[in-house]
Image (cartoon, rainbow, N blue to C red):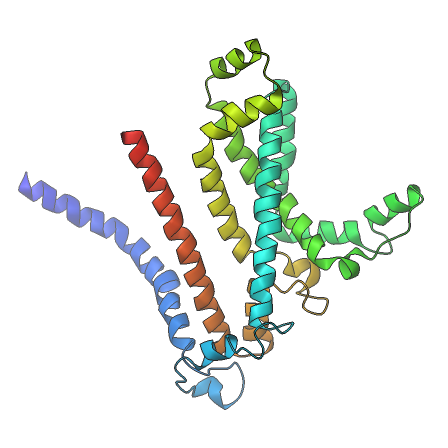
Length: 303
């Protein structure tokens, strides 16, 4: 029996070894390499490309320099812009819209419910490049669908990507990511026993009262999970780059795009790596909070 157990462990280790090598090569090693590069002045071109110097926390101090922290196009401006983007797109957009759609689906015919789910999920599973170019064509000034609709209604054309770039990427990302919230909340609402809502119907409760007093309190755990996950995803999303490339005048340069500009346009790998480390730390806070919430939920269920 002991020999069989030893063989099982050996066989298990042999099966896991290739996965361990891949994780080490493509996850762990780059993780520590980025941290190391963030403490150097490595660049893509020039003398420091081959012989970078150790600068300690110099890259981090330059990012948080008080004189440029809030300057348009710098790290502080991008950080504040990213926070606003997350608040409007993830929290006020995806979460609220996803919950409203999920609640509305509880009271529609089954065939219409399935059709709505298919349409919403299509926006989620299509490649990001395809979606971005579809939206670019939709918002184009000369031949865009939106401007054609505006003209048909007797309204003036709008140069949406130049006049309202931030709100364009907010709406775009909300439209793109609402499907996840909708499916999560739809599953949560469907798990509530129908007798709860039937009793509320007998008492003469309105749809809003049923949502407020029955639906929402019973899915609070799902709400927290959804908010944490979509916050992390929205914080790291890079797709808006395909619409605006961070412009015009840095008005849509969220942190993921700012990192790309610093590292691959300005060729400052060290500074770009420092931004990446800061983003990793922020995501780590979100992840730890998510684990804490899920463990609390599991502890309550076990009790």
